[in-house]
Image (cartoon, rainbow, N blue to C red; front, top):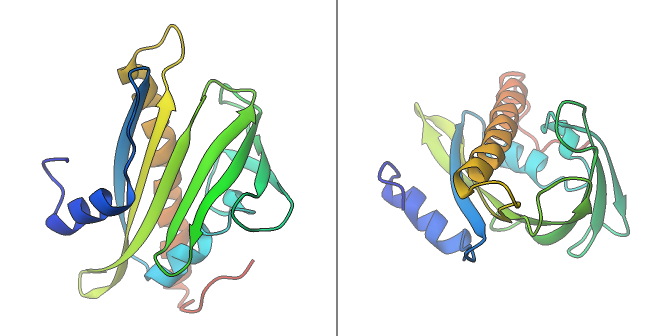
Length: 183
């Protein structure tokens, strides 16, 4: 566990973010505190069919099949990244516990055997409703890369996504949108 995590953060990680990386894989867990209520943040995170609502590197997403566990989405990635497409499967969607799990199953990138879990948890920030967001991943280390390089790259993408999630959620919260967002 990270030395700087609170007891509650460590408990959530232990309970929901159990990756067991093999020798050729790296794994990490990132945390973001969002000044918006959990139901609002979850309404964005749970939209497997519309990650572009908060993920700035996604330009388009098409879900194949029903919007349930096992569904696959085809994601188009904006230029500037070493990829143009990603095929991803919904592994877990729990609206009660606020857990979303996704596995990359194809695409023109180097993230092989990538799997992530994102959870959102209510917390109080400055006496107001806030959200603790935790995202963890495990991924193969590509040939020619180190574990540190691979983790650094994936962490940078996730940090960008989490910052954008916070920005979008906080902007909606400031607009006094207290109902779940339905796009």
